[in-house]
Length: 267
Image (cartoon, rainbow, N blue to C red; front, side):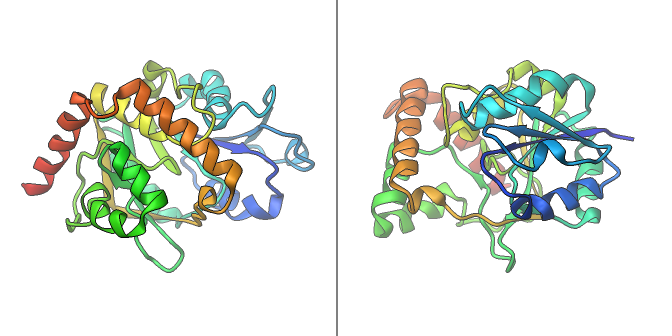
């Protein structure tokens, strides 16, 4: 049977906050291990007893990507698929089983099901690579963002079959383990935010990525950076790092990958 190893990064999460996610993961026969990476000092995770659960204490809170890399570096070679999972995810066991069976023999490196809220509303997890204007508008100009998001979030399209998309949301990233190992995990210079865009586009370039809307998972997404000045600053810092790395106005690869996605949607 296909072995999926799951990494979850904890930072002051209570057991109550992660209980439903753990229950979903541990109920799946495909999940071989769930790695709980503690970036703080959890008062429950190190005591949690389950044959599939492994507790790892990182050296400190050095970021989302750092925490997941802590698990990736130790366990990715022991799995067929490696899941980067937020601690606020829920799914039906049958949906996850169908997703795993669908992707297990595919050549792409990264897969994402449809991400929805508890009420079924689409979170548009498959996206184009953003321009600086996309991110600025989404945070500071709702009126401008409404128009730009139609294309950036692929809202102009009815997506019912698997497609290539260069940016797949970081809340539930299902990697082919060989691809993730080759990519060497996340770029740890990103403390928080944008690291999912960075690794997604690197995977899109090297292995391909696939959005699978025929399967779905629930994500209790809160957009914390919209509510916290500290997290907003972290988001801005990561955006600057991202565009310094890949290009601000000139990013030829962004256009190539975005155009490839749009062409696929037009078929």
